[in-house]
Image (cartoon, one colour):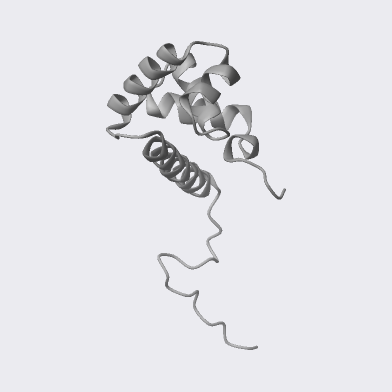
Length: 116
């Protein structure tokens, strides 16, 4: 997927989970998602179909929620949050797997079996 952007690589469920974790409104999420593709406030406004002033307001709210000062920083925080969520979900899935009693526990290899 050369040239694919991060939102394209996330399933709808993954994007929704990320938006919830960042506590963004649906419109703020839409503005942030557009920012993955275009850099200027005007381009974001055209992509989302709102005025530049409205984009500015949404960006201010996003910056406040994510404690950042730019859209680039907001994207960086969103990427880091996605990676953290993915790791947490992966760890939870790993913990939910049934444990094979023959497997190693906490890095200790299983006992060697004697032949015969």
